[in-house]
Length: 192
Image (cartoon, rainbow, N blue to C red; front, side, top):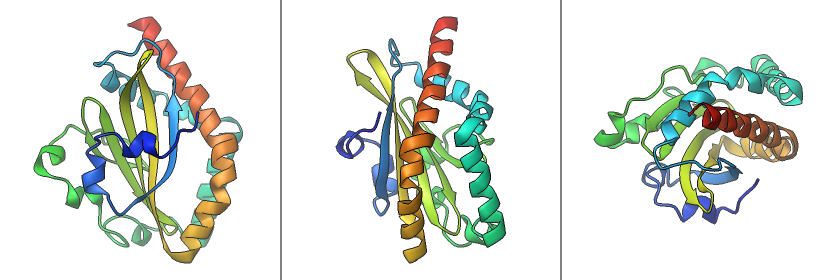
């Protein structure tokens, strides 16, 4: 379920101090009924393990098309990414976040930090520099998972590209991700 921007900006997330120059593109909520304050890291691990299932169906096809277009047009060249076209946000991290135990297998995203209620990873290419931020937010069912996508488009083409893919994100990608991630939570909750 899509949420207003304030659902992200009103939270005391550490990402605010690291990326104040990034725009909030999307905020999405995932139901995790019965989630407790200590369940966030277990859910992150389960989501990483289940990532392959997101590569199926129409959503998977869209990602395949996107990666092929990126290859053809050079959007995903190494010189369009972090450390070349843009500096990695790891350079902005305070020492306490730099020292968090981050997963290394997040390709195409690169993990920035993991806390007990917050995770951030970045990606950069010829269209944008983006952040996927996951937060663990108390609500009336316990805790819920909340995803924010923050971006800095790369010029006019990046702004055009982000506007062009918005209907696909809202109509196909995020609903498929919601089903997958909520199923992952339900499976995890049953085994706990």
